[in-house]
Image (tube, rainbow, N blue to C red; front, side):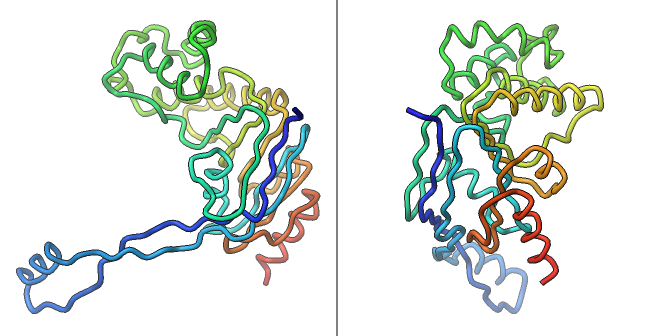
Length: 248
């Protein structure tokens, strides 16, 4: 079956819990009210009637202002959220770089966490064994492979998460912005790795505010506005539409 991704009238509604404000005459009464008040559930529509296709070879930029729904749509595309309405068809293995620490355990060793994260990514035990050495080398953590994860710095954990997440090529890769954290030496390595993975993936979907990266990397663009598709087509036209919306 051909590699591809298709969203048809996808909608997403999620619950929020809201606690109403109450007037009180003293700090004590405020504490009592806060402890006894029961929050009520309200529903908020995040995405509505989102449709687009990505076929083998496509690089799709998701463009939109803050709060437009880009990250929520990526979570639907990765399977983290199930659409409330509509349907999503995915043919091919997906890998998302949204939360690169997903599947980690602070009490486990660095090497054990490579196994945990690799398993969460759907890799076989044989594949995990094959990539463990290069993950440790790329992240610069070979000397602390048997240390527990919680003893590492935030930067070291980020390097480990990135190295595991990009250890193998996937059919479909989904990115939320371009990597921009860590020391400069690692950033250069990471950007080179990302360019390589983008070239090696059959489909790339990238949510970004950086229009130059969108123009350089992608051939298609989907512009989101208040959770709906304002435009879907060529990336140059998508950028023009986004700029028009920002001026409006």
